[in-house]
Image (tube, rainbow, N blue to C red):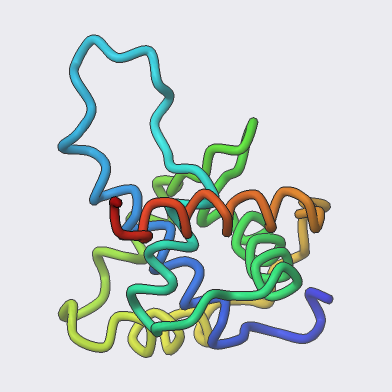
Amino acid sequence: MGQDGWRRSDAWIFVSVVMANGAGRHMRSATTRRPEGVRLADVLSMADHLRQLLPGRREVEEAVRRLTGAGLITVADGWFRVTSAGGTLWRARRSGVGAVDTVYAQLLRRPIPDDSDWTLDDADHAAAILEYAGRTEPAD
């Protein structure tokens, strides 16, 4: 898969991880035991916000494999984090306008990464979608 090169969906998922991580920072207390990072439901929520579309399981899995293989994000115990290399890539964009397109252009200038072996099973993807859907349903 790494031979396929970068895809626009890689940029979409990367921007979703970065923005979801930034959006959650202000909600953490200094004494929290919660690790840095966000859950898959948070990534899906941001992806939906960016494109009014939820990415499919395979789309997420393939993007995360390339992004982790390139050292731009990590995923451990279900927590998605931006690495220092990912932070550098994010800060190198010129503006917030068209972030996905800007990041995609930056990715295209990077070497094709070796894919990691990260997998996302159908049940975990479905559970994250249900968690996200529960957040967006109006209260009775």
